[in-house]
Image 1 (cartoon, rainbow, N blue to C red):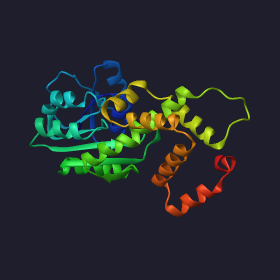
Image 2: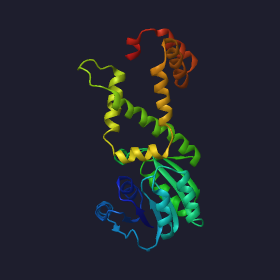
Image 3: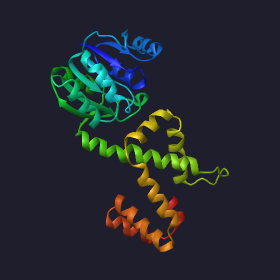
Image 4: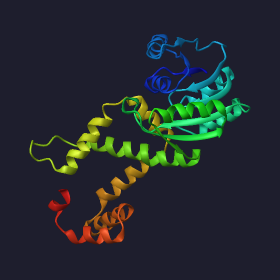
Length: 263
């Protein structure tokens, strides 16, 4: 099977290494395409070319995936897939520009360097080419999670947009503390802040541009900042109800000691 991967970044390179196929990379950066191709003993393809492939995979930023599908879907003979991370607009573009072909959107829920892991899968029009790709991914130890585009994109509002907003807000607001004053909760947040801020700014900006979620975090933080003691206790209980059953809530409320809670 011949596969054209449009986008020679880390995710495109991961995809090329994760499937069993003859790979060609196309990218706006020819050097990046050449480097990615070298990792899979593949080839470099002309981004503006008209060569045809069994499968075209779009591994571009989520804010550009619909335009990339419009430009590249015509080069596919059997299937079009993407690994951009947003599903509803990607699948709509595939249906519009490749209505007769197999179509799937795949979202690896991990950074490439942490593979294998869970991959969200929506097969809009399945067939042997996509089946072969999924079998290869599963054979690499990945856990394939079938979902719907709406459920996936809705979940990403919390899993990515709100989560990143909360961690980045902490990273911006937190001040340095003397050594020895760290609590377990602070240390965990510090670790997460270090992990998130070691990434690529554009990726995080694309997620915020694509998915809602940050505004809800901002609203919650504002409510906490403006609350009096009774209101804060109420907000605490509301938050606890999202994460614990009633029995656990009662134990937490009765515990009383903030020092114990920090441990």
